[in-house]
Image (cartoon, rainbow, N blue to C red; front, side, top):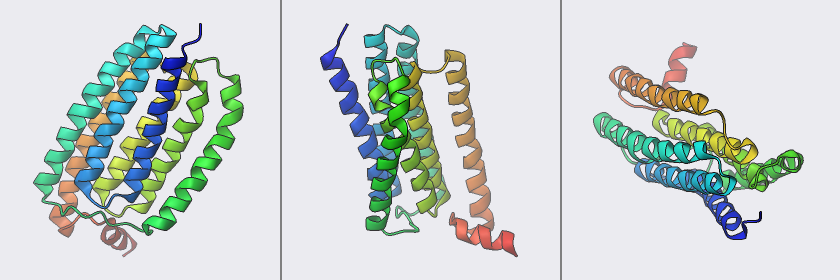
Length: 220
């Protein structure tokens, strides 16, 4: 049975998810990056919910609810609290300037759709055409990690990368088994808490969260 409206809605949400990663690449404020991550969580939850309703996959409905709670409520609260405790400045330090980063991002999107095209033809899901969007989100998020100097913004890139993986899994195979998804979500939560402890240790020893100084120390 065709669901043209629902499929168009899923496609729209996929496009918005991709735009949020480009926004992360261009934004120069840490608090704005966290708000973009919250928007990603809302988009991802809505997309998962829509796919679950169209495909009749009940576990995707639970996944959508769990994703919303974790990525729209729990993780952002932890990150905002962490940044306030660390007394970080709001500026995002980047390795490449924004125009060069945007060009690299566009090339990654083209590459992602070229690689995902054969996979999309083999998939049997209603939203298989969005596998390329998921792959592009993963690669762009990795670019966020590579082009940011502060550890907090790199963690945001890794969390965005995990969003891309979840989006890809949902559209390629209707998601992973629920127990696996819960395990991954728990790993993300615990990882964020551990990064918080790590950040405090860096601040106590180096007085700021710029990884360049830490790298120079390791080299010495």
